[in-house]
Length: 333
View (tube, rainbow, N blue to C red):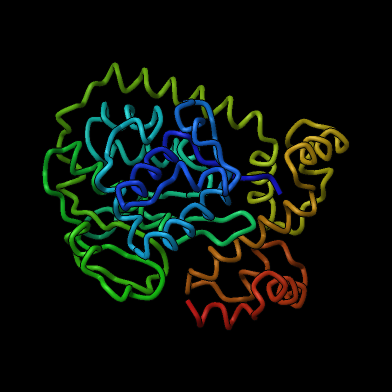
């Protein structure tokens, strides 16, 4: 499987948050096969699963399951790579968070963000994906805590969300969460999200600068293009997501869409540590998680959206992925 990666700038923020919590990252990096010096290289990237192991080890060593919330204390635009500066020069937080969604993969590929208007405000939704390891909840909690702290830092205002949605059981001690978010908390939620007031999202930012915003857009766009071109896996995954609702896409069709021969596609995927079959399976598994979280979709509809002509094949695949039926999975949600 092609490894998702995290930018060194985001990894450095995580390390600062962990060190603030008394974890000696310099000592545990070698033990996890990570290069501590690479944190200072702006072009270095760290494997997603290695970051998951870092979170797990940090919780173990510190005895603090809420250690991810320390990210709220290490706010600096550079943690978001070039994207942080693009956010700063945006006219409003709404425009800034729209940019954050657009360039998210530069910061970390294991996260998917979406930002959408609600009846009375805006919702920033976060999904974290693991590679071979399920993602650490601390990673998602850190991302939300950081995003909110960054909004407060940018505006100079004590922004309080309408609500904070967190997946997973409520912690034994919710106090650190109350202190960081200063908003109503909802645990066991269907997804991670910050719900913002409309007025907070639409007030002008003191750091707004239209010409700088365009410059940073160009930098971020170039970086993303360079980064994506080097990863056929991501391009193939996008094509698969588009084609799956029409039935299981053939390798030949995906290769044609990418203007590659079948052989070149297979070779490039192999170089990135995956195969066509593996990528198809991974993409279906990820989409299945997303679709089942949407209560308005029936299991039959989910099966067809994932390109299974026969629902029984979907049920078999699902049991292989998650060790339970789609119905049991949805009930657990």
